[in-house]
Image (tube, rainbow, N blue to C red; front, side):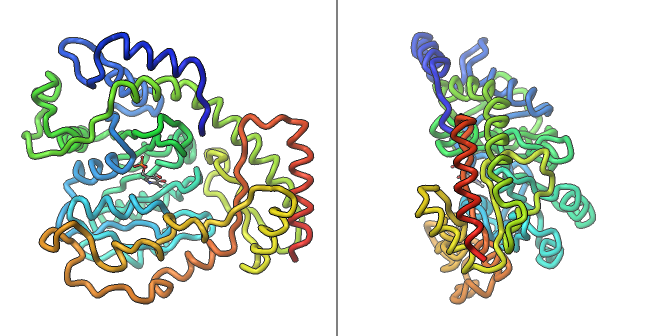
Length: 392
Ligand SMILES: Cc1ncc(COP(=O)(O)O)c(C=O)c1O
């Protein structure tokens, strides 16, 4: 959410005045060190690494788990493409898995997609909706798989009282422009596992041992990493954003649940079943219609009333049928590094995860506004009701 104020400006000024934009400073705690401590404390885990993006956090999380060539990683067919690009970046194969009406990965399809090569699952808490983490963790345990939670769209959410991102072996957050916490770009990885942490830290910064005393003390031997370092300016902004987290979530949830009331008792429409309504983030008011035609009628009727409604099936980058690099098996910049080399191209993507496409084409979203005036809210909800009423 773009909720910014004087505190963020003051934080940026503090960094500029300090003369240090680099995440390390010998013998001193930097903004980034403090941000990592604060994320770890807020999430209740021992380790956090702030990075340049959520994508970087996914890649480093997989590297931390030792995922690489020959391994398969289950990813939902509805997510931002980055979730599927991350396995490719470490040389592994992303395997598309259906979602269910919770709009998150379907545990029943996870079981069907597991092969002897499967090494990890990346459940994604899409639009702030928690995955069915109890079931996913028990499947993972049974098959000896890692779970890397992609909570990039669910900063601060929870499942059965546990923060999203802290239930699996590691979890990721994004702080890009569109996310609950925003600094334009950046992200973070959290984990309770010391080895995953050390490996991920080296992968996120191949030069870390030259700059950080703590990195020199790591047990994991120094290997060739990359550079996904965050800048001090972004860390300073995210630190302020983190302090706003509870207020942002409160505002989103309040507006969402008011909007959801508009659909109560309307024929042919039902709220998306949420795996844990208390822990979801309020990023969207999501409803499913009995048919795609009804959903389209709803969108038209919303437009006529000046309501900004959308459908995930039109969201392009979040629907696997648009992920050309995967479908055309272009999994890297050169063929010798392409984990998908030799696999047949997917010429009929609609046959791969039809359940996902069906669900997305019957789903409509309205985006809650955390700062919406309560008096304005009432008339807005009445208009949504009017739009929904005429769809059956
Ligand atoms: C579900 C999901 N995963 C991963 C990412 C990647 O985050 P970033 O843009 O910070 O790299 C995003 C961002 O849009 C996302 O929505």
